[in-house]
Image (tube, rainbow, N blue to C red; front, side, top):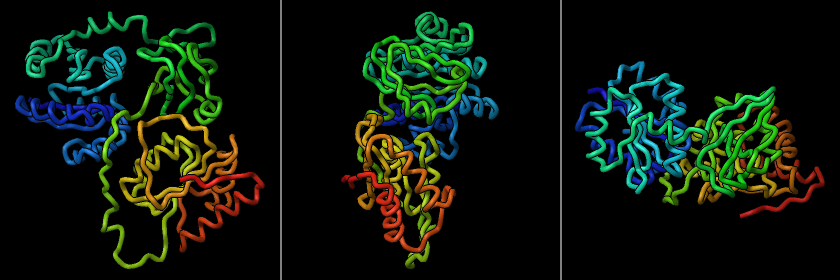
Length: 374
């Protein structure tokens, strides 16, 4: 049997369950695992599993499933560790719907009291039952899950407005759309309201105007929506460093500096840079944490408007965090982009300390107060 395994999110890896499940499934056939989503990549690296779980491509879970279908897999397992069984089941339903009913089995929250295994394909029910017994998980059919989440999720169209219900939300959580924090929940029932692709309201929540400006126009039906923390577990980061083939032992004559203003971008493509300038509190937090593992420092341009998106973040000791007056991080960031980077995403410089001085002078000339944070 050819078995494809889509690993989604950091929780399933941080808990050790992904490793356990892959070992069990390997007794049933030839397994091949790849990541679906982006936040799990750091967890895979920290667990030293990048040779076991393919993280080389930035794919959505549904794209990873489709790739396995194209590769002729007999069965595809979706491993997930949602905040609750409701959020996990709603996620699995959306994935299988996007993939037009693939040969899919979902393993949700293994190791927890509400952990389940879902046979999304009726023909795989008997095989799913075997795996359920081996993993000691409650077995559900896809139809049972659909009945469970009916009314808790989905799109409702009314005139020119589109309403998208979000399942499994708790009050006080961040609401992410395509990786950007756009608001905060006030209730357990939350609905996103969009008109012509622009989010106009969060029923049961509070909009974050700054986040909406970054988000822009979206397809609310296809958008990736998450709530809560991007990564809950507090782990010891694995320091990987840079590829020594790229970093010669001799002293360098030039340094590669990158500019990043969007936390939803692929931060991992910056792992071989020498310094990254990040704009925005959340972008700075996420980028600093990821790049810490590759010994890449950052200069963060922030304004104190931080949403707690990870339980604990790390940053390289050579990093510099500049906190401006509220609302000025994007404005100053744009000036730095135009004056220091000349409108380019990456530049080559000869001296990092001179670059830092130039950047701080640009900020000083605006006349706006700022502080250097630890």
